Length: 483
Image (cartoon, rainbow, N blue to C red; front, side):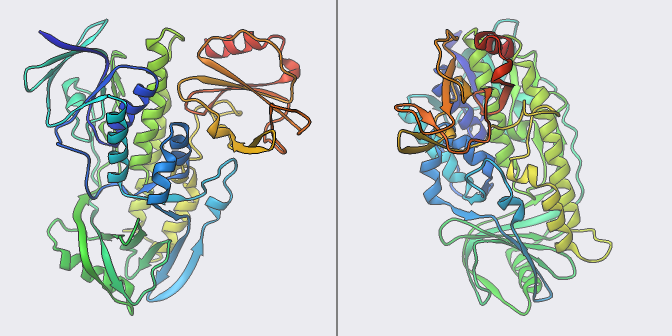
């Protein structure tokens, strides 16, 4: 017997599942999330939000809650045999159309707790201490049966239930895993050391580049230590840290979290089943933690998927759902290539310059690591992120990303007089003048786009762009671009 009917069931209430539920709720979708845990994460796991994620969080009123809790970091340094080798941050400094040119170092628990609290405020249900036993799919709906016997009917199901995904296994979606036999310890804690604490990522090179020191929020620091054995203790990991840092020493006054992970790499063969069941986050891609791309890639999955489900549920556009896999699967494959090259460089180096090699790869793969190089499409501006920049309303200063709406497309008109246009209700229109000779209108001193009409997707990527002097009808431009 069906006990509930909703638009979307989200299986998994980690950061990706919670983000899917939150974005869906903002769009007015009836969502329910299910998770075996009894509450949000308390410690451990992911530790950084990249520049693109910070932009996306601004779209949906989450950025300001998280910013004061984290620590900004955009610099990496290399030390070898106790001596300073190099320091660099230029791949962050060179980012265009970006206010947040840094990681925000912040534990995953903060994101989960914020999203969980927001969902409670919005009266979106998260069924805790619940597991999914079965999902049945037909051409019109899905039925999810819980271990309690309760059944929930929904139009769609999202599997955001991690690398051992029940949802993925239920529909027999292949997920072949590569294991490069690289094992790490990870330690979060409060330290005492004669090496000065700085807000930068430090890679220490001994005989191998086997230790990375990651700054974290508050008093916490994180250490990744390459161990290459499945059997080791906390003392073994700390000993390796001290060997790499010689002649400096370090000890932990308090350990918050200690774990180990074996590097695993995989991308699911499909990100959906019959366009009724979708996979997001670790359920469809896993890789090394190197480069801090796991959480960020999963959250980007959620931002890509949920607006498409929203538009589809409301009947506003056609053929959107098949673009989710087409857009996100190549990104996942690129992330695995980036993190894979990084993690292998910590073990294999022809000249014994592991740490320096690592930094060169970071430079090469900066588009993935910052998130700002992700694009959908290979040529032109269509498919690229819309740049952020200063905008004024009279004398009041704001920025473009504070004016975008995740629930709708935005049509930006640069440098053209206002005209009466009838557009669908899921498209906002924003005129931006190119000088300050206007009242009660938006204007910009130096916008990166001039004399252009740009249709921006809800996830702040460019759908279409055309010079104003080549548009015969703005209405036709919009309708043709969205079709």
